[in-house]
Structure formats: structure tokens, C-alpha cells
Amino acid sequence: MGEIEGQVEEGFGAVADAFRANFAERDELGASFALYVDGECKVDLWGGVANQRTGTPWTDDTLELVFSTTKGIAATAIAMCVQTGTLAYDDPVSKHWPEFAAAGKGDITVEQALSHQAGLIGVDAPLDFDQIMAVTPVIESLQEQTPLWEPGTAHGYHAITYGWLAGEILARADGRRIGRFVQDEIAGPLGIDMWIGLPESEEERVARLETTPLPKDDPALLEHLGKLYARGANGRRALALDGRLSTAGDNHFNTRAVHATEMPGANGITNARSLAKMYAATIGEVDGVRLLDTDTMNAARTQRVNGDDLTLLLPSRFGAGYWLHDTSTPMIQDGSYGHPGAGGSLGFANPELGIGYGYVMNRMGNHLTGDPRTLALNEAVLASL
Image (cartoon, rainbow, N blue to C red; front, side, top):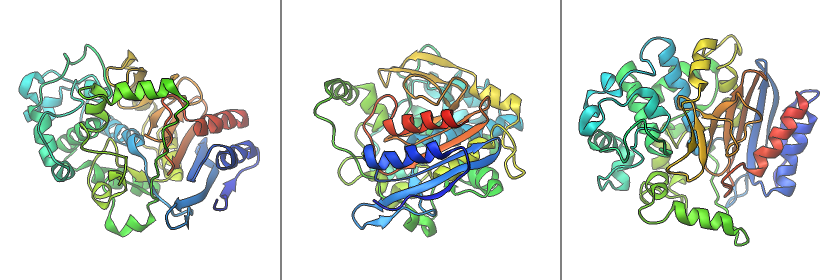
């Protein structure tokens, strides 16, 4: 195990202890964790191994792909566009993206698309990996796609397609691709490391993801995963685009191709410090920068859906693109909004507690509800406030 490094302000030693215990007791490989409180960084830690094959240590400069934690970045970008009047949550998507109205989608609103109500969890078009990486064929396929259910009547997690929907809505309304928007309006002003579409110059900083074998002694987990990924299941269609994207074997998400493209629901690359600072700036001023005013933040975190998820086969709860605190994704307490990512990463804010929180790792866990690593960190954070 690499050395644990970083800074911890007085009163937050329990958080450092929990982070350290993740390595000793919860099979952590490499990770970073950060916490902002009332606009100030109180915890900024990193450690372990960034690449298990080479033994390269995880440093303060290490980045990682955070899967669906990216959705919180996209939701923040959209909220910023709502704040400036560039678009509204109740706008029909087709107001900004006219081609989207095809196949009965003309009445789908921006907030329905962001809260997984659009019924567009996958595409029927037989796109190959290279076409998916090119993005434009996916956008054209989504334009032509018929929803799987009547939009607005149910919700099912749009694991991958969420990002392309959000990204295209933003691009049509604002004129910039979402990767450019994030650099111009979030990463640049805050001075953080955060990309949707990583420049080649930063590639060597990215930690290598490692999967964890499925536990043979957890029949409930195995049964649920079997249902999720069964042929024809919504889960297989949404989570892996019918097997066209995979974390197994030679993990697609370790490739330069995936790092370079724009997949705003699944391929953001950042670190814990940057996630925590971004979320802190959605609830207050950080180093002179505030991303969202209070009214916009509250509108973005207002619940749109709650209950049975047609994709995940578990209850889920969403605002305007943000996952909201619930039993499947605990974020300390109610009022929190953010997003988890496959394998365990997590970023969120809680304005009542005044916190921005970021956790990033490279050993992917298999937990359906609450990764033990973040549960331990959550408990330590709450005890320290």
C-alpha cells in the first residue's frame, strides 16, 4: 500500500482514520477524499496505488475516471444554464434540439430527460464501439429512438444515455459542447482538475481501474446482477448499451478512446479535491467563485421522481439530474444532492451542513446500495461537523 498523504484540519481526524481504515480493512487500492465545509477545505487526502500492474503510487496529481459521478457535473452545468436563462427545466427538449421531437418525443421536457423519465435508456441502432466514441451517431440514433415507455409516467436509470441527452441539450442551448463548458465555467474559474473529454496531455495522470471479483457468498447480489444483465433486460440495455461498453476484461474505461470522447454520463475524469470544491461552490462562495445561487440550487435538488426504477430494479430518487440522498445512495442526510459512480466514487453537497464532498477510487466495488468505504467516510464526516 502506498503512503497516505494530504492535509486534515483540526477536528477532522476521524475522517482521516476512516480513509486509512479503508485501505487496512476494506480492500482499498488507491483513492482520494476531500471535504469542504463552509467554503474551506478541511480534508484533502490521497494514497495507495494508482496502477496495480506497475506499482505507481497515487499522488496529489492523480486523476481517475468516475463513471456516473460525471452526471453530477453535467447536472451542475445544466443548472448554470438555467440560472442564466439559457434554458429552463420545463422547456421541451425539442425547443433547443428540434430533431429530438421525432418518434413521439416532442413533449419530453428538459427535467424529464434529466430525471430519467424519457424512456431512452438505450438505442436500437446497431452502433459499434467506434461509432459510440464518435458521439454524433449516438445523437442521431437518440433523435430517431422511440421511448420504451410513455415519458413522464415512470423512471428508469439512463446510465449512459443520460450524458448524451444532457450534453446535447446544453450544446444546442448554449452553443458550446459540454466539455468546453465545464472548462470555461467550472474547472477554469475554480482552478480544479475536471474534464469530460480528457486532453492527451493529461492521460499519464489517470489511475488504472481494477474490477473486483463477484462475491460467491452473496446470493442476493448475484441474483440481482443476474436480473440486471439478463439478455433483453433494461439493465443490460442501459448500463452497458447491450454489451457494447464493458468494465470486464480489458475494461473499455481504461482506454484512451473512452477518456478522450465526450460521454457526460459516464467518463468524467477528476479527483476528490475537485469534486468537493465544485460541490462546495454550488452552495456558497469558494475562493471568490459561486456556481449556483440559492434559488437555482434548490430548484436543481427538488425531487422529480422517487420509487421503483425500471432499470436498476431498486428504488431511486432524482432531482434535475442529481441523485438525491436515499437508502440506495446514502449521502449523510436528507437535503444532499450529487451522484455516485460505478464501483464506488461519490460527490455531493449538503447546504444545511455546508459541505462539499468528493471520493474517488480505482478498485471498483460491487455494492448495490452504499459502498462500505463511503459509508465509513460519511459516518466520520458527520461525527466531525
